[in-house]
Image 1 (spheres, rainbow, N blue to C red):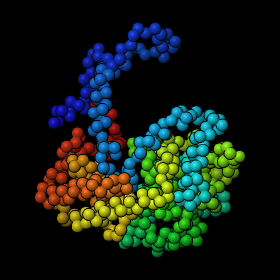
Image 2: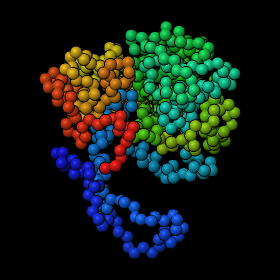
Image 3: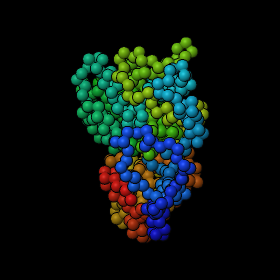
Amino acid sequence: MEEILQHSQLSIEKSQPGRRGVRFAAVTKCAADYLPAEYLRKSAPKLPEISEFETVRHFTRLSELNYCLDGEFYPLGSCTMKYNPKAYDVLSALPAFASAHPFAPESAVQGTLEMMYNLQELLKEITGLASFTLQPAAGAHGELTGIMTARAYHDARKDFKRTEVIVPDTAHGTNPATAHMAGYTVVNIKSGSDGCVDKEALKAALSDKTAAVMLTVPNTVGLFEKDVREIADMVHKAGALFYMDGANFNALIGLAKPADFGVDIMHLNLHKTFAAPHGGGGPGSGPVGAAAHVAPFLPKPTVELKDGKYTLSGKMSQSLGKMKAFYGNIAVCLRGYCYLRQFDGKTLKEIAENAVLNANYIRVALKGKFNAFFDSPCMHECVLTQNPAEMNGVHTSDIAKRLLDYGFYAPTIYFPLIVPEAMMIEPTETESKQMLDAFVAAMDKIYDEIKTNPQVVKDAPHTQCVKRIDEVSAAREPNLHW
Ligand SMILES: *Cc1c(COP(=O)(O)O)cnc(C)c1O
């Protein structure tokens, strides 16, 4: 098995002198005839000499070594790895969108602008907020945009003493990073024993120095902040703004409008909730919405409809400026737009309900073996833990690796930080009951192995092309040679 895998992985090392992928007929014109001599290579580049067929096989094999959403159940918590309809890919690749020149006059890109305008309107409708920008290229970029919008708001009121942003310990990790990057002092507050914001801790942290409170809703332990309305009032009373991290809006879409519980600014992740592909480092899209009193500070331009024509309006004099060149990640916006046009309000509500149902199904099915850290109904994901005394030395990372052997992508692990040995499982609404049952059966089997043969779990994975890699070095010192 090892040998076979090696053979497939290293086929590019099978370079044979003189072997070629493509041979062209006689060359009539050559770049060398036109370029100045100093730009010409002195010697041929050292490229592998390999046939086209072998190259295709090499890359096809490599692609098959990857887990992917189109191949396996992908319960990666907080990432909403739901089904991405293929029709959206076709639509977003239409040349009118994909080939539009970034400097084309507005009259030539009315279709793109109309789509952007309609998407802004739909996002306003599902969140209840007054205005949206489609510029941010990811969730974290949306957060940065949102916090800079908050600063522009305070600055316009000459309220310059607000230097702090409050972030609970159940926030997504990008929240404190964002606040810090935007130049604020991050004030962390602990959660209560129920996994929600401890209102006393919030009260103690709020002051006339608070610029914003960033709340992830649902929070990273998969719970809805039950006192969110009261929290919003506390934040507003202190003169601060309430920022909602809405990356996990899959739990709320069609069910709740953040404007109704007092949100001033929020971002959404089109590449999660709105079925645009996620992962691989982008492209993404993290539109930011704002309530009326904050809307004038959002990035400009926004798309406006005037006399039947769509136009980019740069008039907002209090705007913080531009956050992204040209139109933003249009192809991702298009997929999100298709999604919102495909489903009516009732269906969107069912999407959220089923996302919540599926997460609770897994939470309850694994009870007694892997328990939820906070034992209450969850939203779109459940965060499980385990009792180390019962685990025969097996850790969450071992379980994650063993799942690969059973054909499942691993859940998010060791996050959130407040849950020891955390496994954060987000099944999404697009998985069938049969798939959830298969996952639960695999987890049950791993539990049995932990009891009877823990070594097999500790040594996992057994069926993958690589064993345990040094993930830190792989990220910090990538060796991309072979
Ligand atoms: C995914 C996520 C983010 C970050 O989104 P990116 O597009 O990866 O930058 C922020 N907050 C929460 C709650 C998330 O789940």
